Length: 442
Ligand code: ADP
Ligand code: ASP
Ligand code: MG
Image 1 (spheres, rainbow, N blue to C red):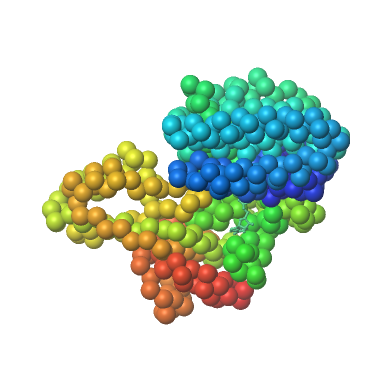
Image 2: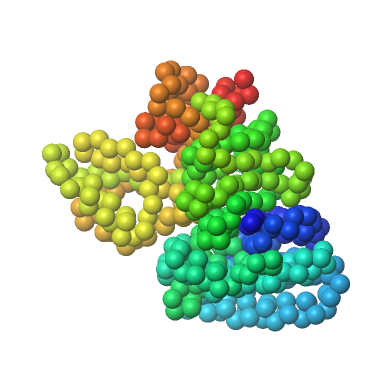
């Protein structure tokens, strides 16, 4: 059994949907298909849900969403029927937009329109390609807690619900990214969360293979948009791929690989544009284990430094600090400590899967027991590979290359699969190009 996920660009136009549908039709083992919103739509919906958008920009955004979808629908054999359903959906969207201003719980409902619209159209493209799929509402199957914008899925009920909904020898189409809480409110799994949904569904179904179809031919040695010499990786271990996704390789949502590892599901990342290319296979044991396999770059990182004058020889300070962060569901990436201060990095990128918002409440809670300093505009760069804690000279050759740059934080030793550091955001791409040349293009 194969679970296949198609990302935003793979369903962004009629031509893209057609290519994706041909891929689905080419192998009858593809049982469950999850798709994202058409590319650009979730960003537009985020805009619509933000406060203070004037009515002209609001209208322009809605028109953009409408035209993007109508330009796909007009190619369908039953265009007029699908168009009238779509227009009803759009009216519904407008109503929800008004509600977001009153209650932020409605925000996730607003975001869910992207995936709901794309699946309601794609089902017809599948049909035109001979695939009679059944449409499933992911919100009835994927139950989550009520953390809107970054909900935690409930695995137990997922298996049960899927078991009831999915029968042998049929094909199902559903939405990535969305679920609902026990009260029936729509929730979302964080930006880019369709990969995570697909992995959870694959685990729950005991699938043999999870396919992530995207706009690049697999996982590359680094983001091919940043380094044109980047090349696709044929085979990568789960450990390396997990580090890469956590440290910013946007190609996979950071939580994707855990369910796949638990469920012993193989994962393949491939391109809908060039489906004939092998893509990347993520495996438990890889034949080659290079010291540096890939590089990742994550921008918009914030550095939070807290100092306590009482910290000298005090115990419990770190526990208190991390309790405030945990209570506010703030996830921390790098940490360095000295006797009287602690520095932490937070992912504050707009589209981050685990976007951190340092609210005034968090800051005032922290300031009851420490001094707080916030600095922005950093980037996090990671070297991903194998045996990095055991390879003599690796940090020497890395930092020798970086001698012209200001490096603010370094984390080496916690994982044998990565070394990472914080640099000025404006230097990020130049550093990645330099390191790619040194460690990968050799
Ligand atoms: P989708 O909509 O299919 O989920 P995403 O835009 O979320 O696609 O992810 C694919 C993008 O991830 C690529 O277009 C590429 O720019 C970016 N990316 C970042 N790092 C890597 C990497 N190491 N390998 C491949 N793609 C990467
Ligand atoms: N559509 C959602 C997003 O853009 C989820 C996804 O694409 O994976 O974040
Ligand atoms: Mg994605």
